[in-house]
Image (tube, rainbow, N blue to C red):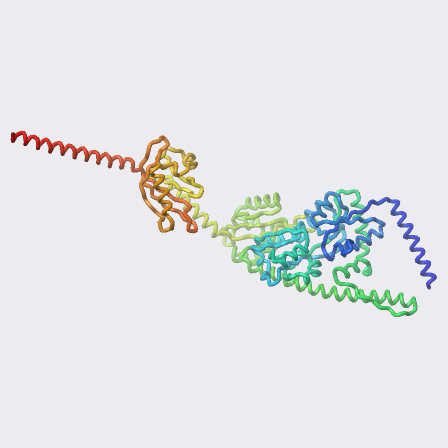
Length: 582
């Protein structure tokens, strides 16, 4: 038996040496592979060696092909940029997205299926998607779970949640920020989270999203790419078909736990070989089966809980969520459609947006044109038709949804009823129109002052006629420049005494200087404007009393002259009497 085994090993060694020489003859250059820190999938150990699930696969394939591998460390974003520029040939652990497919080449074989999970600090009260509104959420910069289909950005967009996204260079940074409570939430892939969540003061939530296909990515239009892609796809297909391959061992070691040790008694060699192979296979399959079933049950339970929460959010949201196919037919719509439009979900599904839903089909064309140009639409306002024929105003956020190859399948969006807001805006516009009419046609001069900017902000035609200034000249002036020196001092003194909102209106006489230098006597009725207790401006009605003032002055002068004349007449009478007496 030992003789045959010895011969067998000699043959193997000979074939290996021959194969190695053949590879060397091909003069394959060193293959540069990107490496970023994402324990346990890919990381640098204490000895400075790149290891993990993906590196084990790369090392195996390179050994089979006789390649020399050079690991190029960096952040995730650095690795992506280097792959694009050709500084590296391969980047493992890359999720497929439609934008990335335009910049990189992906392997045909899917290596891993992963998903993303939301983590929060200990004692956080975040339990659902809607709790993220107004919060700060950290994510790996440029990552699939941030930028990819059904990633964090799209989820926040779909649920109309306003949150601050903080991009970080590594998942370790995210967990450290969570532990220090510098952020409200953070997302990682499930493998990193499973391995590290117990080492930090963080808690996993039930929010799970974005199942993703993780593949090898290659530089686009590079000479080596077709060769590398073909070789890696071939090996991955073979490895995944063999349950005892390095693929499943690495999967068990890094993703599902360390393999158990097997102890063998000293028995005859041929029986030992059979027992090792048989027991090892049985133990491996049994362990994988138990672990897989347990993981599947756990993941299924988590996904069901997450789906239930999503469904509850959709069913109870006042906003309308919908999805249409490429022809504009509704294929999904949330139950709120009945309250908003009168249609049941059964009636709405199958209806065409342009012909049956939009008040104006042209608006649907405009909507699609904007969507085609930017890839998304925000706050698109239009009118839709209710079942009873009445119209209602909506504001819609929408984007295209696509398959894994980037083909557009239809449109999905969130629509909010803004009918009441539109009615309020119409009333406000009508009120402003009436105010503007009164403002411009009032028999008195009217202007408004912004004290913070120290400028006129509005003036009517009558005031322009009073002062002789054009409207644009008036609006560029400092209000104090309109007053004479005495009136200016009086105005400043009165402003300083207006310390509370009790003094909101006053009426006082001032002298203003016209454009031609003449003085105009006016009465100003001031309506002072306060914001948060602070005086910010004034609305002023101006009455020209120059003629009245002149008339009063003329009357006083006339009275004075009459008085003088009366005195002179009296003096004359006295003088005449005295002359008579003499």
